[in-house]
Image (cartoon, rainbow, N blue to C red; front, side, top):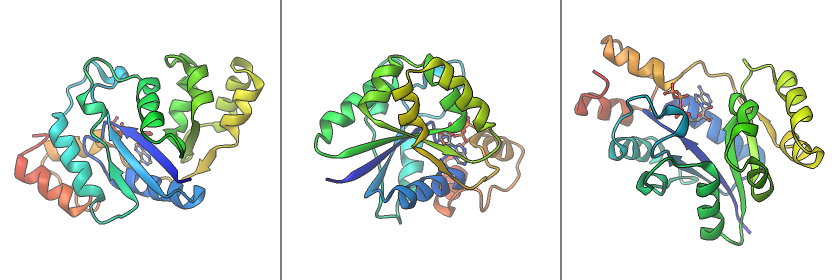
Length: 203
Ligand code: ATP
């Protein structure tokens, strides 16, 4: 039975923060692979302009090309309408029926979990792994969740907390740097940097 991580994100663009976090979780949980899942139309980013799906998919492909444990799925990119996590998890659960699946979220998202569509079923149907990279008051988040969730659900979430390095990078900052004509070298893999330059993204 393989252990497979699922890492959703906008990835506009993918950066070293994503890659370091994904690798830390692969190592910590001894995952066989991590599947990056670029979001079609993230429900929480519906008012923001994001790069075309093909370009985000290409950038993730370039970012992970040299890592045999990393894969990318275009599944969410083909969905019409908002891609709720529960739908994605149902898809991957039926695509990999005999495997252990781990859905990766950031500690900031953990606080919002009770607002997600069908969050109880979500917690039951997959191992939700929280990547905690500091910056978020995790005790406070956990205390709030303990008050909101069933004890069994709360315990399941709490035991899947993984400490990841604090990498002060965001896709927003990278897009802004490109727009301002600043270098993004070392913030994204060289192939992603080259693609952004060649395609004239974020200008
Ligand atoms: P944006 O700035 O456009 O909101 P982002 O950099 O936060 O983008 P996303 O694609 O939205 O990137 O994030 C996908 C996932 O990666 C989320 O779970 C997010 O918490 C995580 N993530 C984002 N930045 C980092 C980072 N520097 N280190 C570790 N994980 C990160």
